[in-house]
Length: 397
Image 1 (cartoon, rainbow, N blue to C red):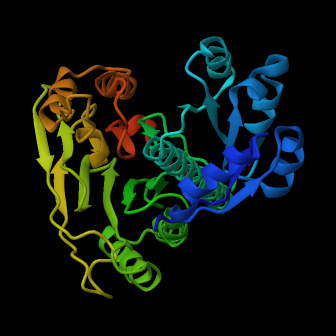
Image 2 (image 1 turned 180 degrees about the horizontal axis):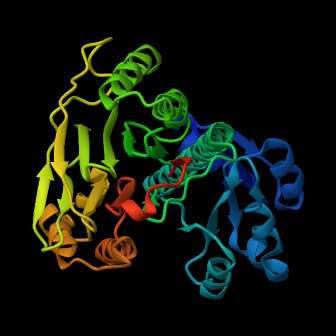
């Protein structure tokens, strides 16, 4: 026995014998039937709320298909009724009019039981599919609203963390291009009491509220321990301990910290799970500083790696940090943007506008393809003359 449709079948025919014949043909299929003459169609549709209406072609096409349009009326919750028209072979004009007015299918007289069962089963299947799609759409709209609300909460949380503290050093430039409304990339910039600049790039597993909750302790620890002059390894250990307590299993923070010493003209790099940090000298040579530590919240407590790399720099050298979303950005092929292309662009050594040049090049590469991850790119110019402003900055893409 076939499964019953979401609602019954309304047989709105004036011929009582034909209504009885249809009941016999469809009676064993498990459908729920309602009957009425065509003159009572409005009451039948409103009271019974069928999913399929059977109409005669003459009644359906009368008065500009007024009856057919009423039979197919769209219910906000259940959708449009399907209309099956019974017609004689010679009534081609009536069938053409009904087709233009929205009839879903036709059954020709004399009635063929197999044809009727097949057409009704097809309409029932289509109606179930339509109702399933409507329900899925409602669920998607609900989840979209939840995600939008989470993002608003995340934005409020992050604004409260950042407050009015802004540090726009003229030697630090960056762009953040989130995958969607909410992002999981984090940029922090601060200055130690001795004048050293500290830049942090973080890439959370997750977006929106998850990233914002993780960013709260990270930004707070960064601000406090940077302004108090704590070394990178101590700061990273405290961050790891806090995130390990806070984040659920499977969520972590890939992060890199670069510290620029303006007196000794060198950078200190801690890299835990991000792509290679690139240091470009004035002659175009690139030095890579790969990840030598695990991301935060992977190892418990003080088990965090403390491997640092110190790189001497000269006035005008440039340090580049970026998330994996940049080098893994795909076009429609799909082909990744790639490490080699990024380094070639950096090697060109634009004196100004490198960040914008990278942003435009990556955007052109992605084109009409879907951006699959957040993209962040930071340039730190080793310029001791413009690295002496005090301040603090926080940004969640």
